[in-house]
Image 1 (cartoon, rainbow, N blue to C red):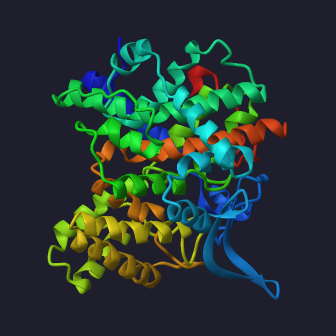
Image 2: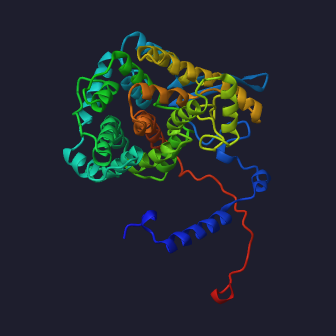
Image 3: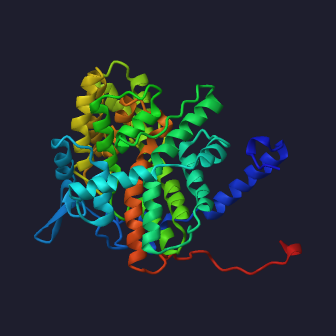
Length: 456
């Protein structure tokens, strides 16, 4: 019997509903205990600074500087292996090249490749793109899902039996596994979408073979679009998105998951599947979907774009009276950055160019308006300990919309990029042979006696 809630009878549903109330009541912890034991909820202090849980050479995030012993918020900076992300992007863009592949090389091996090494690495990734035809038929096509992140995670786990050295944790083998996943993720994600469109939405099934002459970004657009056509700017902007999403420190939720599960000695496929589960959440990789849906909701409720009405509606969102009633203005604010997110700064410039190419100038102006008004509303209605700025999710959803990516592929595109960072961090965790990660939890339950069944 398949356990599906909608197939349960009325009595089963009622029992589960009653038990759910009991489960909730038995697990709510009085907030006073968090204060009493100085618990850093979310492993962050009151200012949003993360508890130091590890060291990494892969990337570095700067959001403040010390002046006379005092932490002062500053414009955000992001470094990949010590190289400023803005200079990295400017470098390959100015040379009219795609940058994702060399970014993957930089993250994994700690240095930028020369021309020969870069070309050899790109050709290696191309050779590793191939997915067994039996896998596409037996795994991707057999059980289509409306959720592409679940399809991606299931496919990753299903690759385990195809690998005769799946549990080998030596660095050469783990690197081989990671490179294969980096190369295969775009095809798995797009194929999963195409199959779902065919089986569940009655659309045509169009599956292109990967083109060995194309970069990762170009290949994604080639695989996705029925006619395989795209503009140079579209491919360039998708490539930049991949670079900007590729890595963001060891403490973000999905990368920390990579470290946690790797520290247990688990295989690469289990680790990546766990990280995908983390990335799926709307507070992490799924945030760009929420941004797009929130903007649609704002436009529906403030169709004339009046700034006063827009501020009032943003206040309603914060007060849990509008949109999804979570009290969050998605795309605004970040766990680390306060004054600016350098990735959002880079993306905003190229978003404007693509908006002009697509004749979506008014849509871009709408985003700019929210970017300006939201921090004012948040600072008026929230007690904040640092500045509020747009994060990369604020504009990435708009980019994907303009590129014609379906909503269901927004977060998988994040995963297609972030698998590079996860791979580097997995190798770093294994190379340094750390202890299994196990933070402390303080038990606050009162003591009581066991009662025999008849006396309860």
